[in-house]
Amino acid sequence: MKFSRRNLLIAGAVLAAPTMLRAQDFPTRPIRIIVPFPAGGTTDLLARLFAQRMTETMGQSVVVENRGGGGGSIGADVVAKAAPDGYTLLMHNITFPTTTAAMTLAGRPPHDIERDFAPLSLGANVPLVILANPAVPATDLKGFVAWAKAQGSPPFYGSTGPGSFMNMVGEVLKRDAGMAMEHVPFRGAAPMIQELIAGRVQFGGDQISTCFGHVRAGALKGLATTASKRAKILPDVPTVREQGFASLELEGWNGFFAPARTPAPIMARLQREIAAAAAQPEFIKRCDEVGAEAVGSDSESFGAMVRAQAAKIRDLVASVQLKPE
Image 1 (cartoon, one colour):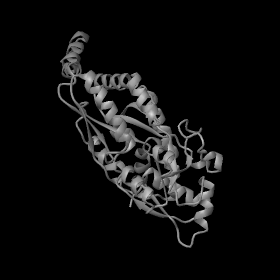
Image 2 (image 1 turned 90 degrees about the vertical axis):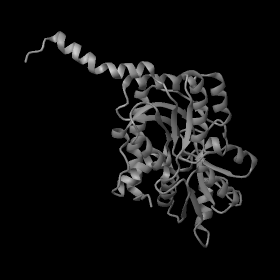
Image 3 (image 1 turned 90 degrees about the horizontal axis):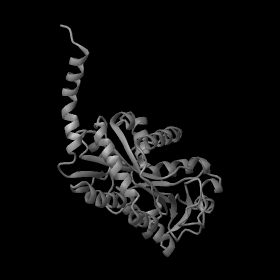
């Protein structure tokens, strides 16, 4: 059977029509943003800010659903297995490549960031700060290391779960400083911060937006930030590089992903809505108040950033044999 070029074009248009119609009508029902951590942390806070603005502009409710556990891998898996129709999104952070690398090293990869997810937009840059309980007699990371080495028993450090970013930070610090610490995993940043303030763990860390108020109030000590430059909101806290721990230098972020194979027109619509929300003066003001920098990037640059950071994190995870258990 012979097909003319015209017939092939018509056939292609017919096959593409359902996708085009879906994209044109999108959204026709509520959209959910999966946050793979309990409520109260930075990623949850930012997701709710985006959801509120997107609800106002998209004509449908955008709701946040918390699926904590597994260092963020449980919630991410929900999105990886969701229908690629734009109605289930993931908002994750630097823990995403960390946990994924740790689980892959352990021989049970939960998903592949590049294969199973489509990057939508960088939502905000949020510096990461390393913290100590105020009872610890140290004012910076170097001082904490000296104090920890002098203790009769190792101090405890908290993280958002085995294989998470702070788990990696704790293990890399132990290696680089030649010190001992005991790991205490939590289901999210909020409960870890509570236990850090209470003194049941002595060392931890999180994105600056959830803890800078505690630092200013004296309930926590800021020992270092992991970014390449000091945070504007905590200018007296030195960076890890300034203190001789350059291997811990990693930029903090929060960004949106969709399931892989989500149609390009729907991806484009979602990216525009996220970027528009991040550009609103009230949104920027709210981010500034908590030490975050609203971004709203294009999908390509966000994807390139995640891939580059994931490569560095894979090397760190392998070097300390970080395991998600």
